[in-house]
Amino acid sequence: MALKWVDSLDIALALIDEHPEVDPAQLHFPELMQWVIALEEFDDDPNRCGERILEAIQQAWIDEAD
Image 1 (cartoon, helix red, strand yellow):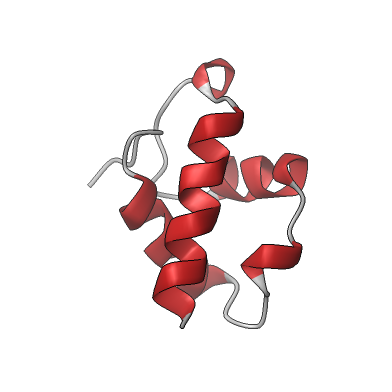
Image 2 (cartoon, one colour; image 1 turned 90 degrees about the vertical axis):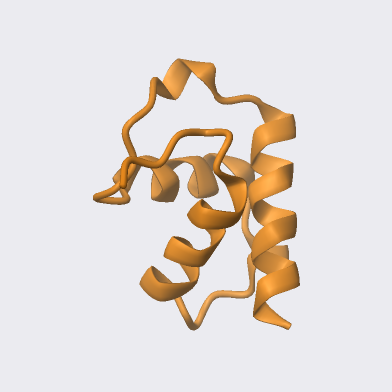
């Protein structure tokens, strides 16, 4: 399944698998963006990402990590 920027929950779940030791609340957006782009399943234009998308991914990650 190809992940797009709109798939914030699925991206968050993939990031939990890739980086289980990370506290997502401490992650800076540039690093988060790079980690998303590096996901094997990710297939979207990096230029389509904005702060709101990264906030949604980060919040989904925080919610799922609890």
